[in-house]
Image 1 (cartoon, rainbow, N blue to C red):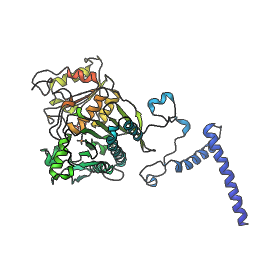
Image 2 (image 1 turned 180 degrees about the horizontal axis):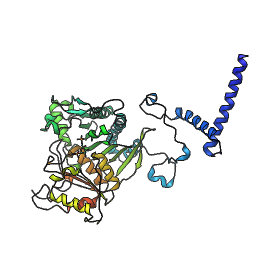
Image 3 (image 1 turned 90 degrees about the horizontal axis):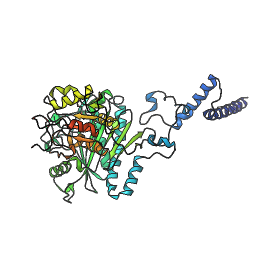
Image 4 (image 1 turned 180 degrees about the vertical axis):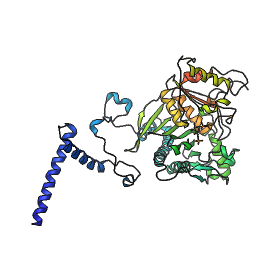
Length: 457
Ligand SMILES: O=P(O)(O)OC[C@H]1O[C@](O)(COP(=O)(O)O)[C@@H](O)[C@@H]1O
């Protein structure tokens, strides 16, 4: 009796499974007029199968997040295989990944070969930092300051996320086996603890003259509120090479030489980029000729080309700065903004104000939509603005300039001409659409003020 029952149940289940499977496949292509109950049964079956086909969470343990999100019914969206910009052709060519883009670039220009390994390290780090940022607060407390060991004995508070990002970036660069990485210590800069960013890294390629300066997590203070943050980097060629390996010198000499090698004006950069951690993770970089944007596909865990040959609009309609400092701003800048707000500027239209308080997010929006981002100097507490030149303002200025925009410091003309004397030196910066920055530049005069026209001693 028992054996017969088992055979009957198995046969029955097999028939049921066959009916459901064929209904699911037919239903996916030809929406049949099925009753709600049968449709619900089909959807739950689809979900059952999809659960094991495409893991819905990366890095996290599914059980810890509760049941998986319902699979989006593929009949309600069209997933374009090719990057968005070429969706006009609606072709389904394979997405161009960052790895492939870089290997193609190296085939065309062999001297970029050493940059490729640097970028592979940065790419790996950005994927990990994106995961850390997205899970911050879930798996560890980020608001807790921690005592950081990257100091000369003095205490600098760092957010845990800052520290984790620095460690991830340092290890990823070392993992390439082609980079020597240093976290410049304050004793190499006469900076006060408040101004020193212990997380900043300097990496030297072992096989070439490339040196990079990297800010692992710009705007980390915003992470507690889940506001966008970013990684920023700029790559130079060493101006003079002693030919002797850094490691044959004393620690002090090595550090000094590595620090000196990045103290160059932004115009000397060979590459620059940022990774924005927001509703999407977007890696934007330039190798000097054009600006390319890649978006991280969370399922493939690959950066896919989504913004080929990015150019900034010649003119925008948004200004971005922290107006809380306006009482300390120069009269010239305040009258420029007053005209933008009242429609008395060159366009005759009123501008909007947008300020996230996270430089990477504010400049990424400016790059895509146009306008002007600024961190001016003020007489209140930022005599040189609040952004470090070497590893924040200059790489962003280089990217925007390469995309057809403009960047000035309001004192000596182009921001890319300014050579920093110290790693953590700050500079006023005005970065954005060519016509918008030129309009602000026309307000500069020879009057005594925080800014003046280029050429004054
Ligand atoms: O709060 P403020 O003075 O407007 O400064 C905001 C600026 O400071 C930053 O958050 C930099 O902060 P970090 O020094 O912590 O990286 C930028 O991202 C942002 O543009």
